[in-house]
Length: 256
Image 1 (cartoon, rainbow, N blue to C red):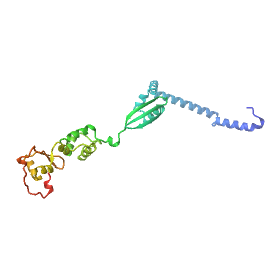
Image 2: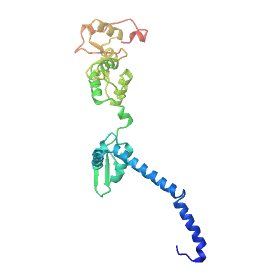
Image 3: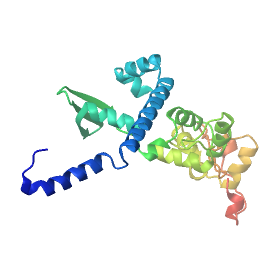
Image 4: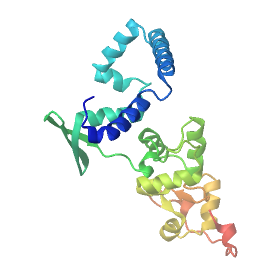
Protein backbone atom coordinates (compact mmCIF):
# COMPACT_ATOMS: atom_id res chain seq x y z
CA UNK A 1 0.00 0.00 0.00
CA UNK A 2 1.49 3.35 -1.07
CA UNK A 3 0.82 5.96 1.62
CA UNK A 4 2.41 9.30 2.29
CA UNK A 5 5.15 8.93 4.89
CA UNK A 6 3.51 11.47 7.12
CA UNK A 7 0.35 9.36 7.28
CA UNK A 8 2.07 5.99 7.48
CA UNK A 9 1.28 5.52 11.16
CA UNK A 10 -2.40 6.09 10.59
CA UNK A 11 -2.40 3.72 7.60
CA UNK A 12 -0.68 1.01 9.63
CA UNK A 13 -3.33 1.30 12.32
CA UNK A 14 -6.17 1.09 9.81
CA UNK A 15 -4.57 -1.92 8.09
CA UNK A 16 -4.11 -3.70 11.40
CA UNK A 17 -7.75 -3.06 12.33
CA UNK A 18 -8.92 -4.25 8.90
CA UNK A 19 -6.94 -7.47 9.21
CA UNK A 20 -8.31 -7.98 12.70
CA UNK A 21 -11.88 -7.67 11.46
CA UNK A 22 -11.18 -10.05 8.59
CA UNK A 23 -9.57 -12.63 10.85
CA UNK A 24 -10.80 -12.06 14.38
CA UNK A 25 -9.83 -15.62 15.36
CA UNK A 26 -6.76 -15.93 13.24
CA UNK A 27 -6.28 -17.52 9.85
CA UNK A 28 -6.65 -21.13 10.97
CA UNK A 29 -9.74 -20.38 13.01
CA UNK A 30 -11.30 -18.54 10.07
CA UNK A 31 -10.68 -21.49 7.73
CA UNK A 32 -12.24 -23.85 10.29
CA UNK A 33 -15.31 -21.64 10.73
CA UNK A 34 -15.73 -21.40 6.96
CA UNK A 35 -15.54 -25.20 6.62
CA UNK A 36 -18.17 -25.68 9.32
CA UNK A 37 -20.46 -23.15 7.66
CA UNK A 38 -20.13 -24.94 4.31
CA UNK A 39 -20.91 -28.29 5.94
CA UNK A 40 -23.99 -26.85 7.65
CA UNK A 41 -25.15 -25.38 4.33
CA UNK A 42 -24.85 -28.76 2.63
CA UNK A 43 -26.75 -30.45 5.45
CA UNK A 44 -29.59 -27.93 5.15
CA UNK A 45 -29.73 -28.39 1.37
CA UNK A 46 -30.02 -32.15 1.81
CA UNK A 47 -32.76 -31.70 4.39
CA UNK A 48 -34.65 -29.34 2.08
CA UNK A 49 -34.44 -31.88 -0.72
CA UNK A 50 -35.92 -34.52 1.58
CA UNK A 51 -38.81 -32.26 2.60
CA UNK A 52 -39.64 -30.73 -0.80
CA UNK A 53 -38.98 -33.06 -3.70
CA UNK A 54 -39.42 -32.21 -7.36
CA UNK A 55 -43.07 -33.33 -7.45
CA UNK A 56 -43.91 -31.29 -4.37
CA UNK A 57 -42.12 -28.29 -5.82
CA UNK A 58 -44.20 -28.58 -9.01
CA UNK A 59 -47.39 -28.82 -6.99
CA UNK A 60 -46.48 -25.69 -5.03
CA UNK A 61 -45.71 -23.86 -8.25
CA UNK A 62 -49.08 -24.89 -9.68
CA UNK A 63 -50.88 -23.65 -6.56
CA UNK A 64 -49.08 -20.32 -6.78
CA UNK A 65 -50.55 -19.79 -10.25
CA UNK A 66 -54.06 -21.01 -9.25
CA UNK A 67 -55.54 -18.34 -6.99
CA UNK A 68 -58.94 -20.04 -6.42
CA UNK A 69 -57.30 -23.30 -5.36
CA UNK A 70 -55.05 -21.56 -2.85
CA UNK A 71 -57.98 -19.50 -1.54
CA UNK A 72 -60.26 -22.54 -1.13
CA UNK A 73 -57.56 -24.74 0.39
CA UNK A 74 -58.59 -25.42 4.03
CA UNK A 75 -54.93 -25.28 5.05
CA UNK A 76 -54.66 -21.64 3.95
CA UNK A 77 -54.94 -19.48 7.14
CA UNK A 78 -57.11 -16.36 7.14
CA UNK A 79 -54.12 -14.07 7.54
CA UNK A 80 -52.71 -15.41 4.25
CA UNK A 81 -56.04 -14.84 2.53
CA UNK A 82 -55.93 -11.22 3.68
CA UNK A 83 -52.44 -10.86 2.23
CA UNK A 84 -53.61 -12.38 -1.05
CA UNK A 85 -56.43 -9.84 -1.25
CA UNK A 86 -54.03 -7.01 -0.50
CA UNK A 87 -51.90 -8.09 -3.46
CA UNK A 88 -54.89 -8.01 -5.83
CA UNK A 89 -57.22 -5.24 -4.63
CA UNK A 90 -56.45 -1.53 -4.52
CA UNK A 91 -59.59 -0.45 -2.63
CA UNK A 92 -63.29 -1.23 -2.07
CA UNK A 93 -66.17 1.26 -1.77
CA UNK A 94 -69.28 0.07 0.11
CA UNK A 95 -72.75 1.61 -0.21
CA UNK A 96 -75.33 0.31 2.29
CA UNK A 97 -78.97 0.60 1.29
CA UNK A 98 -81.54 -2.19 1.10
CA UNK A 99 -78.63 -4.18 -0.31
CA UNK A 100 -74.88 -3.68 -0.01
CA UNK A 101 -73.15 -2.46 -3.19
CA UNK A 102 -69.39 -3.10 -3.32
CA UNK A 103 -67.32 -1.28 -5.96
CA UNK A 104 -63.96 -3.12 -6.22
CA UNK A 105 -60.89 -1.59 -7.88
CA UNK A 106 -58.03 -3.99 -8.62
CA UNK A 107 -54.36 -3.04 -8.66
CA UNK A 108 -54.17 -3.60 -12.41
CA UNK A 109 -56.85 -0.96 -12.96
CA UNK A 110 -59.83 -3.26 -13.60
CA UNK A 111 -63.06 -2.61 -11.66
CA UNK A 112 -66.18 -4.61 -10.83
CA UNK A 113 -69.38 -4.00 -8.86
CA UNK A 114 -71.07 -6.56 -6.61
CA UNK A 115 -74.55 -6.42 -5.07
CA UNK A 116 -74.86 -8.38 -1.84
CA UNK A 117 -77.71 -8.89 0.68
CA UNK A 118 -77.33 -7.01 3.94
CA UNK A 119 -76.01 -9.22 6.76
CA UNK A 120 -78.63 -10.44 9.21
CA UNK A 121 -78.89 -8.83 12.63
CA UNK A 122 -78.53 -10.91 15.79
CA UNK A 123 -82.30 -10.82 16.24
CA UNK A 124 -82.83 -12.04 12.67
CA UNK A 125 -80.31 -14.84 13.15
CA UNK A 126 -82.27 -16.06 16.19
CA UNK A 127 -85.68 -15.69 14.52
CA UNK A 128 -87.82 -18.79 14.01
CA UNK A 129 -87.50 -20.24 10.53
CA UNK A 130 -90.23 -19.30 8.09
CA UNK A 131 -91.30 -22.94 7.60
CA UNK A 132 -91.82 -23.40 11.34
CA UNK A 133 -93.66 -20.09 11.62
CA UNK A 134 -96.01 -21.12 8.80
CA UNK A 135 -96.83 -24.38 10.59
CA UNK A 136 -97.60 -22.49 13.80
CA UNK A 137 -99.78 -20.05 11.87
CA UNK A 138 -101.79 -22.97 10.45
CA UNK A 139 -102.12 -24.60 13.89
CA UNK A 140 -103.51 -21.37 15.35
CA UNK A 141 -106.68 -22.00 13.35
CA UNK A 142 -107.54 -24.90 15.68
CA UNK A 143 -105.28 -24.91 18.75
CA UNK A 144 -104.39 -22.75 21.75
CA UNK A 145 -100.79 -21.77 22.50
CA UNK A 146 -100.26 -24.63 24.99
CA UNK A 147 -101.75 -27.15 22.58
CA UNK A 148 -99.50 -25.88 19.79
CA UNK A 149 -96.44 -26.32 22.03
CA UNK A 150 -97.31 -30.01 22.44
CA UNK A 151 -97.86 -30.54 18.70
CA UNK A 152 -94.84 -28.58 17.49
CA UNK A 153 -92.43 -30.20 19.95
CA UNK A 154 -93.70 -33.65 18.96
CA UNK A 155 -92.70 -32.76 15.39
CA UNK A 156 -89.18 -32.02 16.62
CA UNK A 157 -89.22 -28.39 15.53
CA UNK A 158 -87.07 -25.80 17.34
CA UNK A 159 -86.98 -22.06 17.87
CA UNK A 160 -84.47 -19.90 16.03
CA UNK A 161 -82.14 -20.27 19.03
CA UNK A 162 -82.39 -24.08 18.80
CA UNK A 163 -84.58 -24.53 21.89
CA UNK A 164 -87.84 -26.42 22.39
CA UNK A 165 -90.98 -24.32 22.21
CA UNK A 166 -92.83 -23.07 25.29
CA UNK A 167 -96.12 -21.16 25.61
CA UNK A 168 -94.06 -17.99 26.14
CA UNK A 169 -92.08 -18.53 22.93
CA UNK A 170 -95.32 -19.12 21.00
CA UNK A 171 -96.73 -15.87 22.43
CA UNK A 172 -93.58 -13.99 21.45
CA UNK A 173 -93.71 -15.46 17.94
CA UNK A 174 -97.34 -14.38 17.58
CA UNK A 175 -96.45 -10.88 18.74
CA UNK A 176 -93.36 -10.45 16.57
CA UNK A 177 -94.92 -12.02 13.45
CA UNK A 178 -98.31 -10.34 14.05
CA UNK A 179 -100.18 -13.67 14.00
CA UNK A 180 -103.78 -13.69 15.20
CA UNK A 181 -104.71 -15.77 18.23
CA UNK A 182 -107.17 -18.63 18.10
CA UNK A 183 -109.74 -16.42 19.85
CA UNK A 184 -109.37 -13.66 17.25
CA UNK A 185 -109.79 -16.15 14.43
CA UNK A 186 -112.89 -17.74 15.96
CA UNK A 187 -114.49 -14.35 16.58
CA UNK A 188 -113.83 -13.39 12.96
CA UNK A 189 -115.47 -16.66 11.92
CA UNK A 190 -118.67 -15.64 13.71
CA UNK A 191 -118.43 -17.07 17.23
CA UNK A 192 -119.52 -14.97 20.21
CA UNK A 193 -118.24 -14.37 23.70
CA UNK A 194 -120.36 -15.19 26.73
CA UNK A 195 -120.96 -11.47 27.20
CA UNK A 196 -122.29 -11.16 23.65
CA UNK A 197 -124.49 -14.24 24.11
CA UNK A 198 -125.89 -12.81 27.33
CA UNK A 199 -126.64 -9.50 25.67
CA UNK A 200 -128.27 -11.12 22.63
CA UNK A 201 -130.31 -13.86 24.32
CA UNK A 202 -130.63 -12.74 27.92
CA UNK A 203 -128.82 -15.74 29.42
CA UNK A 204 -126.54 -15.59 32.40
CA UNK A 205 -123.10 -17.15 32.15
CA UNK A 206 -124.27 -19.91 34.45
CA UNK A 207 -127.11 -20.82 32.05
CA UNK A 208 -124.77 -20.73 29.06
CA UNK A 209 -122.48 -23.14 30.82
CA UNK A 210 -125.38 -25.51 31.59
CA UNK A 211 -126.68 -25.39 28.01
CA UNK A 212 -123.19 -26.11 26.72
CA UNK A 213 -122.83 -29.13 29.00
CA UNK A 214 -126.25 -30.40 27.84
CA UNK A 215 -125.16 -30.13 24.22
CA UNK A 216 -127.88 -27.63 23.44
CA UNK A 217 -125.42 -25.01 22.31
CA UNK A 218 -122.12 -25.38 20.47
CA UNK A 219 -119.04 -23.89 22.08
CA UNK A 220 -115.30 -24.34 22.33
CA UNK A 221 -112.38 -23.16 24.43
CA UNK A 222 -110.47 -20.35 22.71
CA UNK A 223 -107.37 -19.93 24.90
CA UNK A 224 -105.35 -21.46 27.73
CA UNK A 225 -107.39 -19.60 30.39
CA UNK A 226 -110.49 -21.73 29.89
CA UNK A 227 -112.48 -19.05 28.09
CA UNK A 228 -115.36 -20.33 25.96
CA UNK A 229 -116.77 -18.98 22.71
CA UNK A 230 -120.23 -19.89 21.41
CA UNK A 231 -121.78 -20.44 18.02
CA UNK A 232 -124.95 -18.33 17.91
CA UNK A 233 -128.10 -20.07 16.58
CA UNK A 234 -129.68 -18.92 13.34
CA UNK A 235 -132.71 -17.79 15.40
CA UNK A 236 -133.66 -18.04 19.05
CA UNK A 237 -135.05 -21.43 19.97
CA UNK A 238 -136.81 -22.79 23.00
CA UNK A 239 -133.49 -24.02 24.38
CA UNK A 240 -132.18 -20.45 24.25
CA UNK A 241 -135.25 -18.81 25.76
CA UNK A 242 -134.29 -16.57 28.69
CA UNK A 243 -134.02 -18.58 31.88
CA UNK A 244 -133.53 -17.27 35.37
CA UNK A 245 -130.65 -18.58 37.39
CA UNK A 246 -129.65 -17.86 40.96
CA UNK A 247 -127.22 -14.94 41.26
CA UNK A 248 -123.56 -15.83 41.00
CA UNK A 249 -121.58 -14.52 43.94
CA UNK A 250 -118.15 -15.80 42.91
CA UNK A 251 -116.52 -14.63 39.69
CA UNK A 252 -114.24 -17.65 39.85
CA UNK A 253 -117.20 -20.03 39.78
CA UNK A 254 -118.79 -18.14 36.95
CA UNK A 255 -115.75 -18.14 34.65
CA UNK A 256 -116.56 -20.16 31.54
